[in-house]
Length: 160
Image 1 (cartoon, rainbow, N blue to C red):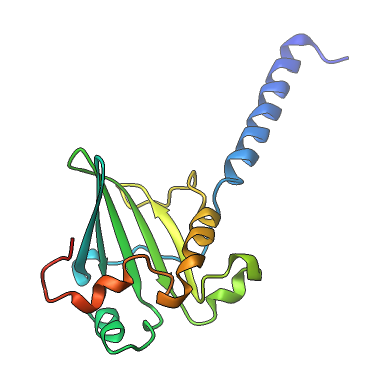
Image 2: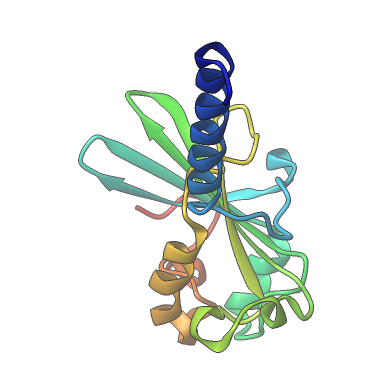
């Protein structure tokens, strides 16, 4: 029989392993990368109570949408979530050739994938990207974007 002194660390280790597995179940790694923000264009702002969201993408994506063409592969859309004037988090949607094949039909959003990042631009593994996909699926007619309808009106000044 194990001594009580050895038994407690084993129980603590087992508990920590269970908590770690549970933590990982909330999020997942995928192909999304954090873009160079300076290369993106801020095309719209959304305000929800004390939250201000600046949404950005590439000039090429803006031109494609204005011309009624698909958003190019490699495009990033970034939602910068501000709370009390500070960056709270980043939400990044990136499109890549064949990326839709990474998911079963119930989770596909074309070839786009989503990822949450902390203010320091490190992936936030406590956020659930499956939730993002399920919500954005309703926007299949607009490249899975909630703000895609604003892009044709963008003339250099962010649309509110």
